Length: 140
Image (cartoon, rainbow, N blue to C red; front, side, top):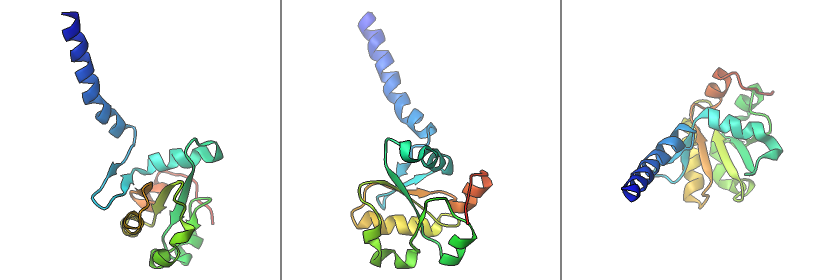
């Protein structure tokens, strides 16, 4: 009887693990090979800064004019149109968050990076618009 109870508890735990991971903001890999992530998850990582256990970088794939109008502090500007020729500026040894205004160009950029062999790419859903809507800090 005790063994059956332990097996039942283990089965419940195995079922709840993916549900819990999804609720915690972990992204799901899409067919293109990158993950979509909620702005809250990206912000939590950004907010850890240099103390983060996982090194990261934010890449803004908008235009220079959009970037100048307000961007995430510390983000590197690499417009999506220039990404393929500037890929050497994107670190392969860090978690990379890509964002644009709403998420369309950053999804395109994430796909480009994934096809080039990058494995730690996250597309920030809703882009800078979602970041601002959540009242997270931007700089000019």
